[in-house]
Length: 184
Image (cartoon, rainbow, N blue to C red; front, top):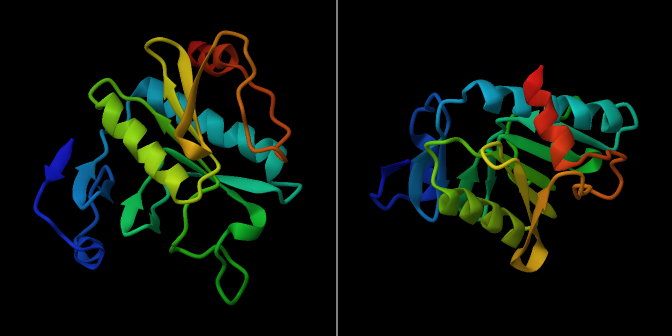
């Protein structure tokens, strides 16, 4: 949902109070994310857990939920943002920084019924155009995962076909696996 079409600068957007759910700033428009519901929450939490179970201990990558990423004069808040370990911004003490001023390596969006497919896909294409290696648009309605690759290449995955992940993350999932999580 577009909150404002008034033309703002990135600095002006960043000076605004944060919203709940989060607002994003893409193509100089403020877009408020929809409030997550049941399916969305299950998929988001389980995706973070699955990635972190295989990538965190080996210090390969980390999956963040609802992380504000600032890059390309925009602010995006992917449902899941996966960063390779060495790209995670750190403080002087070695802790994870609060501000991430770079695109995620892998951006995952979980489609909500009241979202516009085109806007969500545009956001993933924007991420890929600015250095994100892989994007997913997870759609529980038709049990599909749309994968977005560099050069704006898009592929649809359904059923048991193995989903693409970052090459160093040893995670084997199919769309069928992902949507089976909804049965709790």
